[in-house]
Image 1 (cartoon, rainbow, N blue to C red):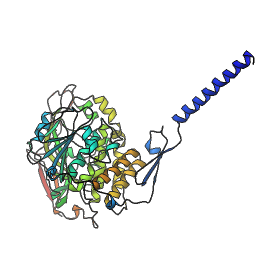
Image 2: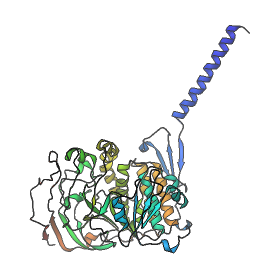
Image 3: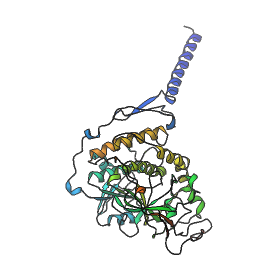
Image 4: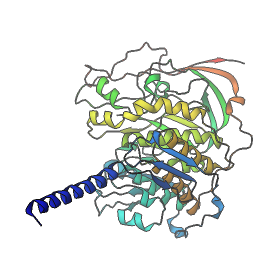
Length: 476
């Protein structure tokens, strides 16, 4: 064989190998459609592996229903581990001053969920520390779905408390603590409350508590300039299984507020009006609520699930909107309470927060509109929860992994002995049972933070009241 012929064959072989290599690389970067299945085959997501836009995915919902009654239970923990009231938080720090305060509150047990950065020897009296290794041993189906270095690992703590008899869970962070040293709120699922009378799809609760120029993180930006709601009705026996308290000091606002409303290097020290009464949001009106000073009662413990496919600065807000919509299906509503905690916020890069919050700015308004219109004809509540979670994948509000996580979460709830809430056959909105007609309530405006004010808080709006709330009742 001639040298020229050998050279040709060698060149051809090299070209052939390069072609095969290119084909393999190309097929990997533009792979055929792959499938992800929920364990019960109730959801199938068809998605190109290089496509990050969940809204373009194809989601197929089969007709198969889950029989929640057939799910086997986990062994019951020892009786000595049971308790009615739990505080759940996660941390990567050694016990902070706020955690120590929480651990000292009489009548409450604290469970602290660790992560890979949490000190392995974390310990404090009246605190149960769930290390990474301990979390693996609990047998929860959600465990393998939760990433490390994620706020969503807090979900393990919720299940741990529920499995040990929790009837009330207070959730917070390691930089928050109750102002009075006690966890207040109503701590009962029904009570007599003032309920907003409004047609607005979103309500800014900060206005009611004297900060009408501040909005909570996750509030749809297109509604910031909406006029405040002053009309209320007095309602007996209101069911409110999720209760959020506003926080003094450095409250939960978005990066846009922090970048435009306070001077560089100045900590927020905002105060809300402690004299303002608690208020309840009616069905078809929403407000964002977070995971920093929130009480969940038994009927709403299913609603604590934190998603994993949205950013850290989005996950608890998206959870709040999701849970708020489903709360209506069990005849309950969200309430807001006057300031009962204080936060001294750890240092943040506000531009990084702005990027992390991008989904809030772009999609919060669309998300609220979707939730207000969403309906399900599923006969049991957990099937409706899963139904909404799947619909949120279809609409691009989170990814398929969160629908999978939702099913695993609901399954785990059954396994740890949680009783699924019933769907009322005849919902009776509290607005049909009012006392004394309509009430006009004007909040007491409090000083707020503004650029070039330094540490000084300033009054901007005209005061409509002297030293307390002003009521004017309109009968009929």
